[in-house]
Length: 132
Image (cartoon, rainbow, N blue to C red; front, side):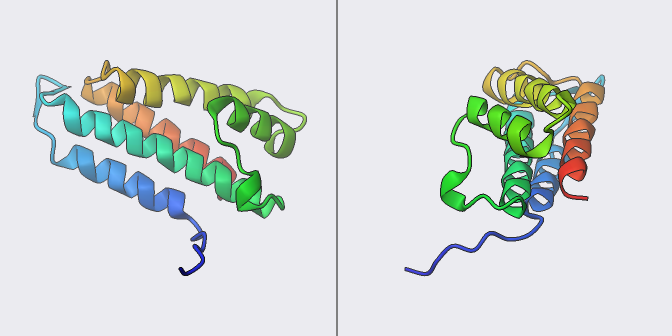
């Protein structure tokens, strides 16, 4: 079996996929009519964030086996390796986890077009901080 190679900037590919899911979704009165593509877009955007963190941690010297396997693990890794003297990045990740993964993907609570677009921008901004 061939060894899996981590592709650079995979997070950006995930974000493009997330945006693509939203383009096909019907909108009426500034609300997405179908929750399914919106939930899928939020889930994909959250995965983009995890990919960005993974890539940043690998650049810091961690191996694939050492990468976090839980939300708490990601928070600890961000704090230890990516924002040693600044808790802002951890707070941003926590907020994006709550918004994208929990409210947007898991519960499907966010369908307002403006809010969805703002959260997608926030996800992209977070990724750009890690992978300029």
